[in-house]
Image 1 (cartoon, rainbow, N blue to C red):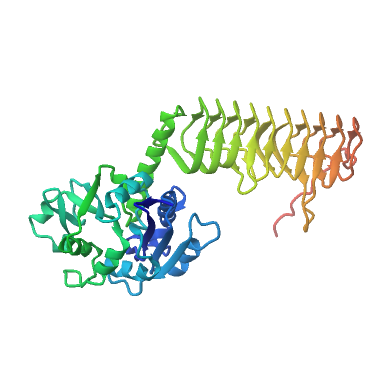
Image 2 (cartoon, rainbow, N blue to C red; image 1 turned 45 degrees about the horizontal axis):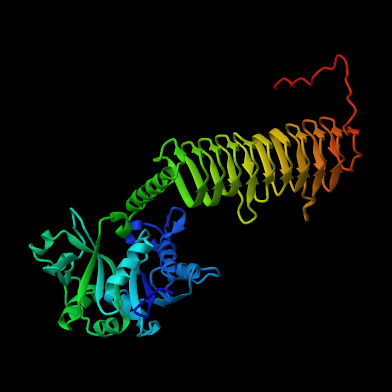
Length: 469
């Protein structure tokens, strides 16, 4: 765990606000950026600090927020405390004090400020050093609405909130980000001295600065220049603006690694994307979960790809949807997928496999060189090498209660508009005639045809409509 002079770090996340301007029934801290709830971004950063504990202050929408925070698999152990009613930021942190040990450094974060970087917080903690109050600050050309940093030379003397600031103080451009690192023991003493004698009638957390100064404790500022790291979200407009700024930054990171993006402004990453050399990605593609792209992979326009591994040289044509969910999807070297194809969880495609337009593959393996080029469904199937799977053919894998598997051995040819009723095995080298419904396994090399006998009636007259009365 992170320590400074043998002091452990505990994180407090303020997540009790109403977020009225979001105009949503979903609590503000559960609004999503890059596919992840805002408060989860904050907890992920706290986990990178190897914090000893995390205390999240909930309030508005707590019945929705707390199940996420306390769910199994959370990145670090979280304790929730409630702020009811909400009487200001100082009152909020007061609720967390019983959960905080006296021996640590407390890092206070906001649940609606999602993009603060761990290295920034590490620097802030180092500034605190276990015996100082450290504030994360930034200069804004327009500081309206933010608490101003009042200095006496290099020393911070106070944070003055907008509504309490004098005209001269409102001209100050250095503002408090809402993030601080503070020794726990002093924090508890200072919070006990708060009052609400101010323009908003609230208990301000920022008043701890004047108490620190009065007690002779140094107040230091760690000033950064990256506004994204301190950007909070209060409205759908701000959420969308931060989303685009974040995505553009992610796009630039990928391009710096050698990825070719046709337009970095039309790219969305909502998880983790690992790219080898010479990957090309066209416009309007969305990547979710964990995606790995091998050397020379080409992704066409308007694809959605989630939880998938795509090997070297594969081409994903436009409008393809791949979602591996928990089972994952793998696409082999040199495979051609799409356009308008869908790969679902458990699709495992070998090298040089072809999946064409309007083909869906779910929980199936396809060996090297197998092809399903158009208008087909393969579910719960094992497909051998060089199989050619005809247009309009399906595996009927569900009997209404249970799933069953279809095995298509190597070098089989399945004609168009066939139904393979599982469980069934089509023997190696066999052929299934178009329009057949196969309910029994076939021998290797056999031609299997199962369809009604064609009947043609000469000179047949269609029924005519009866004349209206």
